[in-house]
Amino acid sequence: MTITLTREEAQSVLDALVHSHATEPIWKTPLKTAIETLCARLSAPEPAKLWLWKNFVDGRPEYWAFDNPYPRNLNDGDPQTIGQPCGYAIFKFSRDGSNGRTEEQVLHEMASVNSKSQPEPEPVAKMKELLEVQGRDGNWNLDPYMQGMYNGMELMVALAERRDPVFRKAPENWLSAPPQRECASEVHDRREWQGMTDEEIKKEQHHIDWTSAHTYAKFARAIEAKLKEKNT
Image (cartoon, rainbow, N blue to C red; front, side):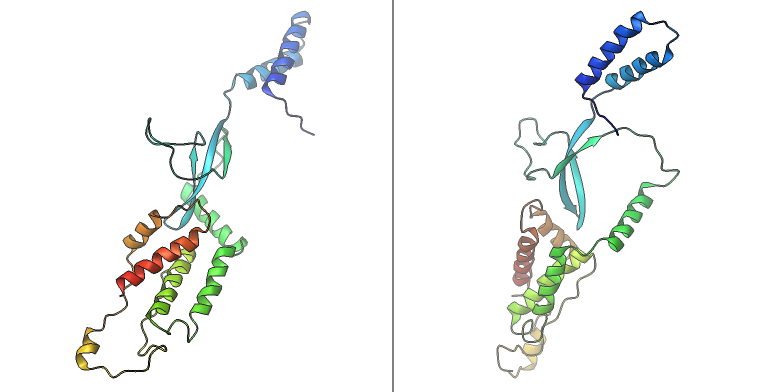
């Protein structure tokens, strides 16, 4: 069983040992060793507490650490709008046991283990269910709005799964309107589906507070609005 002492308790024990050591013969080395060990531990600095926020960078979760729960960039500025911390970590020094393994290798192994051992996140699984329903015949091809809804949801799922989205082009005829004969000029002028560039997607990502609730829904609405704007 391991017993943990506070710094005050450890200091009290050390004072008692020093007092006892002063009256004991010098050859009693165990007592001297205990005193030296406690002195070394108590002289070490307090472990740094790092406050953590979970963020997303390029669609990948990443933790940010600050030395206080209200970080700010400017000396006279307001705290950053990153929400409440998700926890804190205690920084402790240790010996390097990597044996030549690089950080890139460790990150690759972590990603490999996580992809095999962890179940699909519940929000992603739910989004895939909704995408399957939206992609059924009679839903996505009802009208341009429903097509845009499907493509926006496909983009969200693709970002979560770290793959390229597969957008659906407009059908020859929408189910909400009877087929119409088009002249050659109308066929020539009909616009093709306009997707979003990586820069446009990243811009929308930066507009979202990823620490707040219902983040995926807000992002989906933002993508939906942008796609609708580009295709109407």
